[in-house]
Length: 558
Image (cartoon, rainbow, N blue to C red):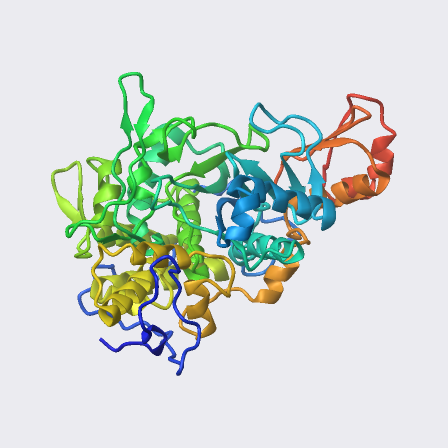
């Protein structure tokens, strides 16, 4: 193995967990993937027939739709871990209090949005969080900062708004003078305590598509196997927490490393215990079945996914979200789905993640065994047949999906410039060889965490980006704009405009995703996430003069 200059260093104390930033030479990774001869992904068809069912969720008349974008409302929720890296700050603050301090600074000093003035529920008292002028939401959840992106129609928009939260948090740390002492991480595990942190995906779908007996079974094999390109990677594994006879947790198990499972491709797979379940707090499931569309319940449903990892790679994020949106479009349009059903989705999720041979076998309920690559290839073949040419973003997804599966079927390490689990594994293995370590060394768990730090001065992922060894799909300028400006083509725009007008008038209000309640009793209803509600925002003074209890909703296409 060629040792990268960044890893040629004497061993320091494991507690630092930091690779040196002074690289003596630069190495460019090729952006072209080789075509693996033994790929099991099916060949691309020449024609793209359309399915008979049209998607009620994707109105072509949306006036703000940009050419080439996929048309699917999507949003993500990211939970941030707070890491104190100086004794001075640790003596004064806990991670929980620092998270609150950063949240308050953003709302009070930086004026990024409007804090809630009323209880949202028992766990969200007034000023626990609020909506941002960029259309998203920032709040405290179980002591951690959590960010929910605005509703987005473009994949690149969604990635820009996800990264915008990183920029906001870094700005707050800089303003508070503690950026050298504190950092935030975007990952899903705590190696010491065994805790897991959430990353939730939300997709708006048509209510016309049967959910329980059609959409869930058709989605399950795809979701379970997509981790082969969507995993963030981790050292070791997590065993089940220990509980007493009254189901009270007796002991939370920390990370274990064995020769059989030194590394795995997904951080969340060990913590998913059901294929579907309604409540997030009690049972983490692959698909959360709670019916809360945050939109017109007669037209829409929100698919809420809990199984995904928090990716640092923009490419991996775009591929993960894009392939999922493509499969949802196939379901909405009534396309014939692959006849695949898994024996045990939860155990398959775990087994794929822990398989370091990259064979990734999958047991089907027919008694046959296939592979995760073949399952993904079956979904890809349907998508290429029916959706190729439907939009620039869809074509990007199909092209990169195929290239990724072919590389995974050949040499997965060829993808170290775009997939997190591959990049992290390459970094750790290179470091182990240089320092003569084994997977059991706790230093590797520290480096695992360093990969996910959002501060470019401390992040191993950012080191790769800086050296042009990791592909990007959005520019920093787009991320900076997304810190404060909402997407131009969803209801996030109208909500932001209304919030700004109410802030100028110093009016009491309660903001939610689909409604803004005013102190006059007027409720501004925004039940169609595809519409921008600009007209309502422009007429807000008129709305404020309406009689109490009146509801106002935008009626035109803007």
